Length: 296
Image (tube, rainbow, N blue to C red; front, side, top):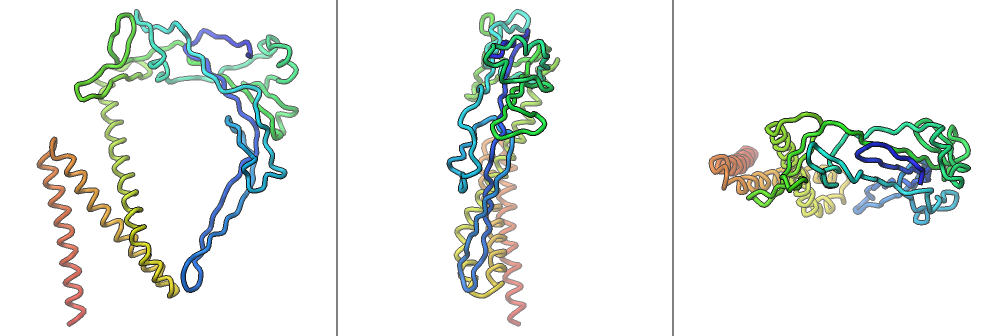
């Protein structure tokens, strides 16, 4: 469309339009006696976006209308003949390659534009600008930028399939296919993959803990709601139920992690369960001793 071609692995086009965006802000306040009420406010700002923002769904669309189309869409073109040594690389591997850099445009390239585009766009920095004044963007103005992935050195971990490469199926049912920039050994690539897997695993565990805490907190929330009848008491009870939800979720999470580890780390699994049970017993005894001291 823009008559651009380069000797590259990948050529990408990004189109952004200056548009209105709606931000919703909700504030919940407790009512005297019990219950709460939520106040919603809407604010409108302008920003560049590579997706069309549908202004018809705005709370106040009048004066905040966005255009419904762009001059072009985002697009990525991959070279049909990308090789690593004697191997021709499939698009699945090429998509994993990183290192795209902005493509600088020259006025000479603008002269190659089709006539219908030449009258609409101008070269501004590293982009084509569709609008009257780049220094004062107006709603509907658009900018088109390009990036390219130049030929470079990459390391690929995959299975040979004739003159190409594809995923390697493991006995565990997973697939191995990895691409890194530069000259990286196989041992280093496996270590990098293990590190990423460890971070992902602990991230999922933390996410599970937070979701479980939120769920238990919802179960206990009626207690805090009933306490809202007395001012300030509801906040104190709510804090207490939140702490209780976190403690309960932490205990359950530790037990679940320990059970899942039993097949590969039995001693650590047993130790974790013992620590979790010991913490519960210790907490109960501390609570019982405080109750006994208060009644004496």
